[in-house]
Image (cartoon, rainbow, N blue to C red; front, top):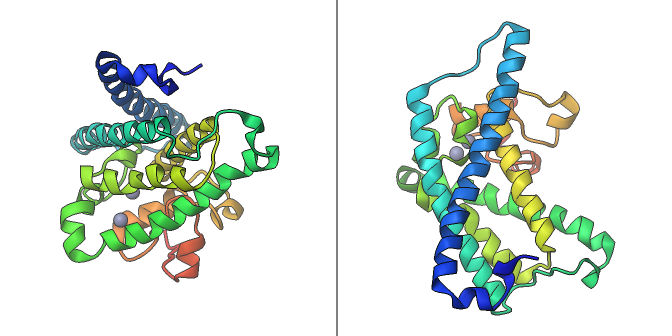
Length: 243
Ligand SMILES: [Zn+2]
Ligand SMILES: [Zn+2]
């Protein structure tokens, strides 16, 4: 079904070059499409609430530029992951019945939980003053994040964030479609977190990070380091729920 999973594909430098360029375009377009769609939804909500949402064209231009560089970094690591798959170094599987259907459904939950742990500690480390200046400052230049801040990272940060995936697929079996689902979910959640408008109910917010939680992190660098779930912030006492 996917020609890029076949060994012959990787013997053709032209096909591989075309694939890499297309992958940058697909990853960047996915970010833009999800961000713009969510922005349209927020604008509709704003009109209903007679409110106005953040518009800072200078900031947004800079965010999209950094997001494009992040897309290139993600592509490099995706390509490395596909090469690892080609040489049978990964536990990725493509036949649903290779593992139980329960495992098929639960494996993305496992990957998301592990990624949350990886991200929380990576994020805390990136706030160490010397590292912050080199790696994480770009993301925090958006004091009031917009939907476009979701992928706005220094290339080194993009690399460190995504490095988890080529490593985890060596260890944890996951169906290719579920890996795609994890990427899509993380993109949607990142856009929602940076949208500047809280859409989750109080009950959901106890476990899932929304815009209020992450806005606070962009203002107060000492709190709210989580990515998608609040669990590590609660456990490490780094959560602040003040608006
Ligand atoms: Zn941060
Ligand atoms: Zn952020």
